[in-house]
Length: 152
Image 1 (cartoon, rainbow, N blue to C red):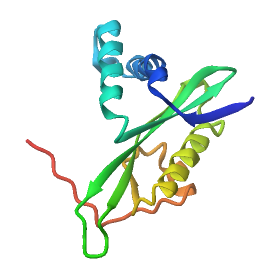
Image 2 (cartoon, rainbow, N blue to C red):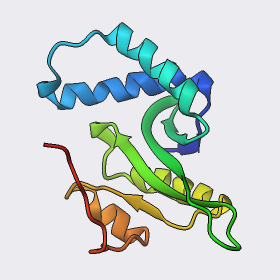
Image 3 (cartoon, rainbow, N blue to C red):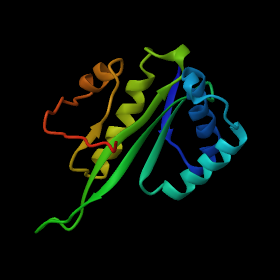
Image 4 (cartoon, rainbow, N blue to C red):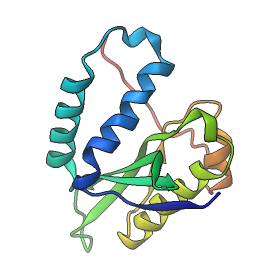
């Protein structure tokens, strides 16, 4: 199996939306949704956010089989640090039939390589239990300093 990972472009928008839509088949709690409206709104969202949310796609035989996003955030500048940015890995997804084949790791490698090129101060990820070993193998460490607030 030949896997190709590359940074996605706006031209990949409909395919990215289609892959994101596949998530709904794994989460029936989403209920009945309008696929066409979702694709349109997702492509518009991508267009508006490409400067802060970089998508990477994995393809096998020219078929989109995985995606990962690197969200980039500007941090408050400091003395001698006029540009401070950090990243967050978001929405990593590999089609169920190809999970465990290294595609997620290849996507993560591409995301972290881009983070290095961009000289991000750090990269975070919020993971589920199944994916945590992937991130640990890639060099992420569990950090007890992070705190989280959610509205009631």
